[in-house]
Image (tube, rainbow, N blue to C red; front, side, top):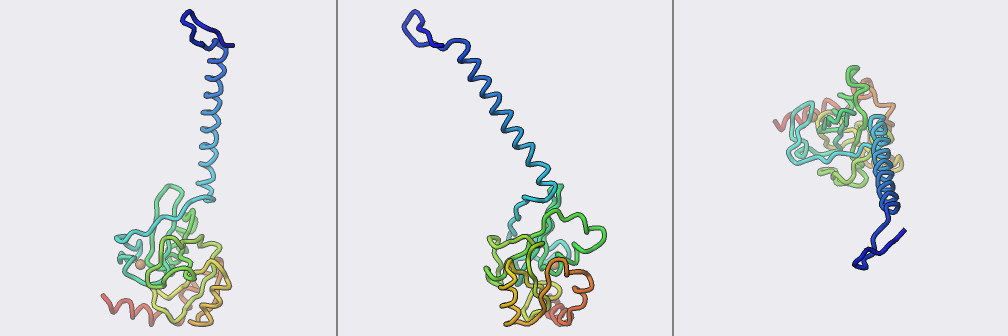
Length: 196
Ligand code: CU1
């Protein structure tokens, strides 16, 4: 409903304004609704994004500067927003598998070592730890504990294993027994500790 005022300008009738206002309100409600829907997702752990490792980050367990150590790293994100970072996948799992922490990790990330430099794993290659494949006890230098190399693809894990030894595990097969059962643990731990 358009009309001309005395000076000849087009003015909107009240109905146009009401309609536009109503559309705006509807749009805002729709956007709020979408935002509201995302919240339960986050808590249910679907869509948390990996958090970058920073050069000064220290390991939640051993306190060492994570960037100074070779091999894949791990991090656990909690529903309440806390982020725990670890100097090695081994220490991530050691923490994750403690009875009191078992249900805390809302999202867990590790490096895909087929895509990044072993000595300086890159933030761009953090992957969901729960669907990753692992090679335990390979003959490579890692952060604290046994080397537990993580890969997005099982095929890449097998190639790595063929070159470096170790045995293939998936996420669910990693438990405190498999962590403690690695023959290489004592050797590699000594090697890392001797740098102190
Ligand atoms: Cu550590």
